[in-house]
Structures are given as C-alpha cells and as structure tokens.
Amino acid sequence: MQDVVSYVMVFITSLLPVAEVRGSIPLALILFNDFSKKVIAVILAVIGNLLVAPIALSILNYLDSMIRNLRYVPSTIRRTYVKLLERARREGVKVERKGLIGLTIFVAIPLPATGAWTASLIVFIMGFNKLKSLIAIELGVLIASAIVLVVVGLFQYVI
Image 1 (spheres, helix red, strand yellow):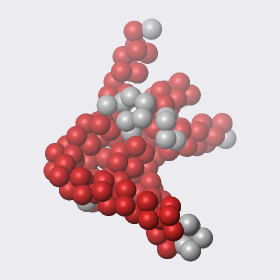
Image 2 (tube, rainbow, N blue to C red):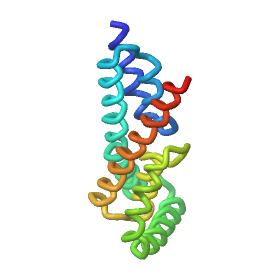
Image 3 (tube, rainbow, N blue to C red):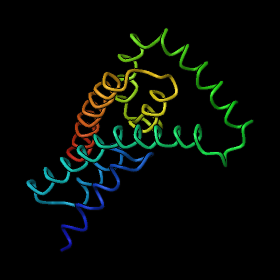
C-alpha cells in the first residue's frame, strides 16, 4: 500500500506546473530504494509530464471557447481578449517555424517555469500548430527527463 501511495505522489507531482519532471524524478529516486521500483516511478513521472501538454491545451481551448461564447463575460473583456489574442497570433505566424525548435529547447531546459505547462500556454497564445507543437513539447519533456535523471543520478552517486 505504501508503494502505491508513493507512486501516486510521484505521478501527481509530475502533473504540477512548477514541479513537473524537475520535481517528480528526484522524488521518485528518494522514495524508492529498490531499483525496479525506482524505474517504475521514473516512468510514471515521465508519463505524467507527457500528459501535461494535451491536458493544458484542452483546458486553454475550453476557456477560450467560454470567454468567446458566454454572455456573462462582459463585452469589453471579450473584445480586449480577442484583440490581444489575434495580435499575438499574427506575430506567432512569423516565429512558428523557428519557434518549434525553440519550444523544444525551452521545455528541455529543466529550470522553473520552462516546462510543458508554460510551453502549452505559449503555443495557445501564439496560435502555433497544435500537433507540431505537441510533438515539440513532448520531445522537450523527454530531453528534460533525461537531463534531470542524469543530474540527480550523478548527485546521488557522488554523495
């Protein structure tokens, strides 16, 4: 039962905006002593973080639809929102090609605020192609996972 709770903690941590794999992989390595359990926990951490971009993009599309279609949203707010989003998306068309490589690198650097949540917000605001952006984000998550795993693994080995 203790292992299940620990696995759930690792998975939930991987979904959190600030933690993602930067927090969940170290947590996985701390919580488990057995190598096979560590491997399972790290895999859960990576899978959880890979789920972030599709979830975030779905939530953002839903919120966008609500803001645009609900009559309870004041028209001034709706017009301002649409105007700002359209302006950002016009700029997004100019940078999308280079932006996808940059997006992968952005997500791959395991620093605070450079993960899948922030990248998904950038994709939404700039109006990038969702499928290409999703691939770029997921690749970045895999690279960040590898970096975190190596750094934490080396740190544990040295100490």
